[in-house]
Image 1 (cartoon, rainbow, N blue to C red):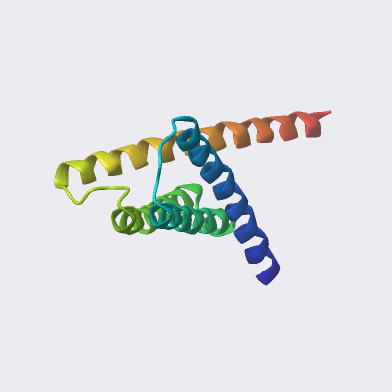
Image 2 (cartoon, rainbow, N blue to C red):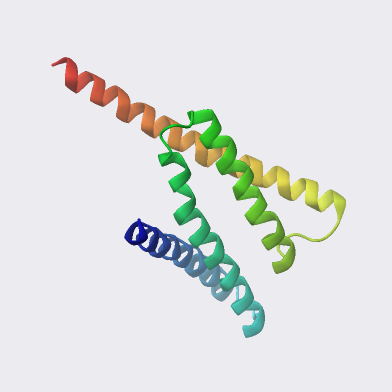
Length: 134
């Protein structure tokens, strides 16, 4: 289990590095100057999210939970990690309307990722079922 947590941590850090590189590339191409302290803070926040999401997928490996329970727990824990981090990092202004919009955007992005995973795993199951029929 320790090895799996370490593996998932580095996987999450790898994904966050890709997103960070993309964001920094956009800043560079637009010739936007960002103070190092601000860049450092945002990279740290992205790394925290990468580590979280790298390990949070373990929730879906809890076999005695239904898929609905796994998804709801993952969603609410993800929101509980993202929301305070987004406020602290300044990604989300402390304003009621912006908080509602931010949570709405989080929900839409979560739904898109969940839908993609659902379609992928449903296709995998169909292919496995077809293979066992032969």
